[in-house]
Length: 479
Image (cartoon, rainbow, N blue to C red; front, side, top):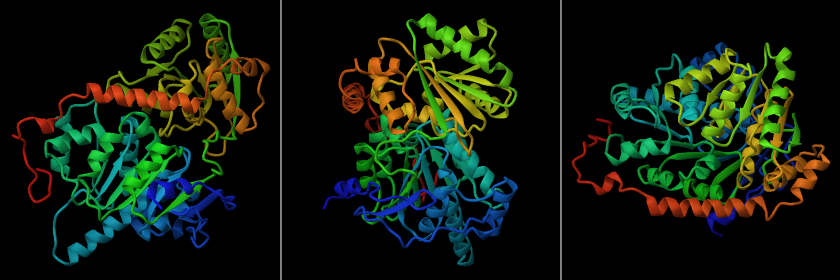
């Protein structure tokens, strides 16, 4: 049977254990021989220096995906992890790689070998997620001697290239575009990468990075361990997993009994159908003013679909006396990082953002998510990721979506999510959804095909087509 078909069969077919976790083999059969790690951090299977950094960071106990990923990763398995954002995936893949890199370095030192190579490569879809993974690598490897860096667009490439050459990192977290830029000019070598992690794989494909990920794979040794994490399991992610993983792999599913993405049960969902944009603006102001007395320790996240829309809503709120900040793709990278840090620290209570803030970002204390613009109907899973910014770490959250009469397709996609999570549905939403045409999945497939066709037609000449006057990599190292 083909690998892609085996992966298709690997969707959960039985109820998860008490911890909300199921493990399946490549044939889709439930695996019952996996012994999860103990729930005590002191008993985690890592060197004392790594355990100490976890304790200093206030790490209490491993999450479900960590308890199952750690022993399997340390045993050398290729893994697929299906879990929503905020489930602890980052430490699930970082810590086993840390331990094995340290073990290998110790053996090489005893044998008289020297040299530092990139051994762990993490691919992330956005700059914010790449920076966040790199920050976690810094925090939890402190004192171990492991070096790390992140590379992504939006900042001068010379600064990152200098860091790669001078720092000689063991761990690189990268966005595919900037990494391929370095690879095309032979300014980085991935020949010694022994651990590959693809994080937020569904988001990577949604953003059109599939061809670039495959370019990166051609620079990697097949003798590596690979892990792929995703919140959803569409056909594109299944095929990417088949291309990345060895034939024998295991799938870890956290809280997912179906292949459809499920909304967080801790989030109450409300949809308001409004007659005009002016009515939407007033409804947003009313929501924020109602929350004003409760905002001393809480945060609100307002989503818009476009950069211009984000700026418009930000300015509208500021003019109405509501203090807030904006975050989107055209903001300067330093400004984006400063805005996110202020939001995390609580200096900013209300953030207006595009989908750059929809997933993969660890911001505690968000209690309300407001969709001023609903996600496009062909990207219905973005609704789940957006409202998943709240209701985390055992707390309750609330999500409010503002719809216009013309947004029937979006209404139907949201209605289906609400029905799957057994949320009460208003008659206004049902009536609007009844006017929708087609299904969200059909629209998504059509949009993806249109995007890839346009991308192929307008693709610029790559550096490989230019005269080969590029610097080289000596002895497999960055020079």
